[in-house]
Length: 131
Image (cartoon, rainbow, N blue to C red; front, top):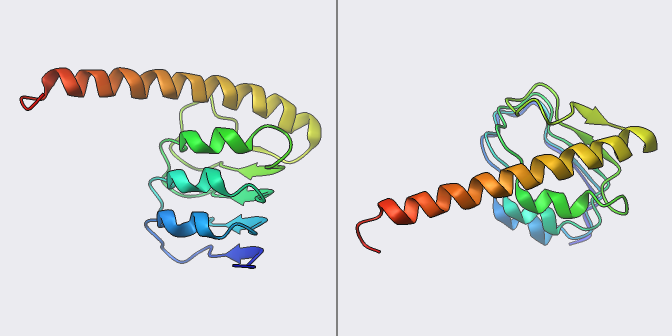
């Protein structure tokens, strides 16, 4: 699909389907002011994505796949303020200096989230009667 800009803000959207990953030419995704609680893992496959605005939602975590886009070559602007994210996530980043600092913070947050996800899945397996 050749869609490059998708603006879906202020629509009371509760979820984004993982099929969003099929929009490989997407450079800007605006989902601000909806009712999103999470983003799909497929969002990390949007390697053309430069701007992601998910401010003013109900996000508690960002997908680990988003970390792949925060390497300085892909995502240039990320708006995540007014969500329910932990304090280690900065509110936004729009300039190269802010983005460099953001990358460091996001990298740390992603590592913490991976560690938590691994611990959580280990506990789940231990408590599962079928395993």
